[in-house]
Image 1 (cartoon, rainbow, N blue to C red):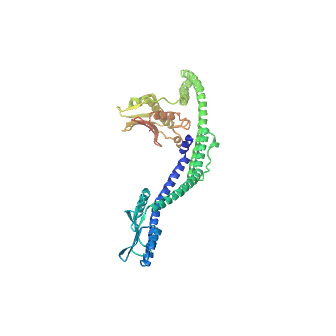
Image 2: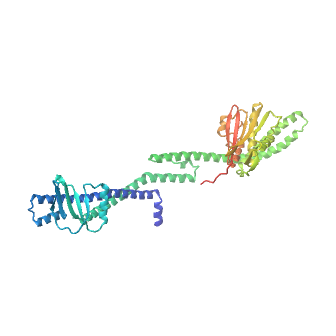
Image 3: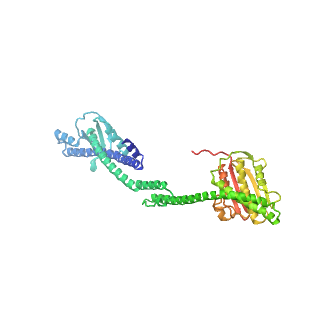
Length: 470
């Protein structure tokens, strides 16, 4: 039972019920406090009015009132004596023995709300029967002042009775209000929220099932907006999962085909190597082109197989000379003086960066190879420029060319595998792998520009180490 109660208090319904009760009770207390103060003031004003009637009776009889009648008048007014001030004359109209000293004097003519509240609770908290003096204005302009002495016990008992009745009524109002608010909020908010949660749980069990996408039905505008946003997200996620599943199946099939095709092409490459030494001049001229085509096909198969394997290992960071590494990449790509493509390296000779040399070599090699192929496709001479530098936060490397630029379609999925490449007929595997390698360094690979004057890629490598979240 205790566990269920504790669990209920952690729910939205339970906490809202508690807050409702607290705020309703607080509101009732704020009403009760001034009500009791006003009740006390009205009680004393009533005594003043009764005392004024008794005093006027005495004045009308012109001192013909007997002691017994005077005693009866004071008893009916529930006061000990009455003083009237008329025509600047203070007159003791009715009097009787006072049982004790006057404890306090209260002037209702100048009393403010805070003073009334203070005096009311002082009376409630004092259980002793005190004699007090009360001063006020007479009604009907029967003088300038009326003053009476009275006991506090009857007033305190009346205040307690009134307060208890108000508390009982407040408790009843609080319970009814809290229950109605609880039912209303549960119906309007809690139940719709639970419905959304159930939809999310059901959808999470089988996100590829389009039948489990939520249908917005909430009447509350905010909840309906949330349901529509959830519906849009689930619809997109379901579509993406289906696409990922198809791509995964396609990737598995491509990997199998690439594996077998690589073996076939390797055998063909061996025979093509023999054709290069043929005595037939036509065969000898065709052999290099055939070997180059087969080599590209083998490279494509190997790239596909490599991409389909597990993620790249974490980079082994060490200090490397960027200019030296760039020179090795240019030399490895065969961009010598005898080619129609000029390769410029604009990197400070002493620039040292912290990176995995092997992985960064692969990234630069891929970018330079793409740049060379873009220029060769034009049939015109061109230039490839590798530049590098650093600032306080990062090192940067730029690889630009004077090729024709990338088409708009290629830019949309530039770093996505199997969704377009940087050149016609490409698969995009090279740039996808390059971007993954740069991300492994904590950096980013981005397309800096691509227009009619050429294309430029930028590599950004951070100098600092990543801090754990939290």
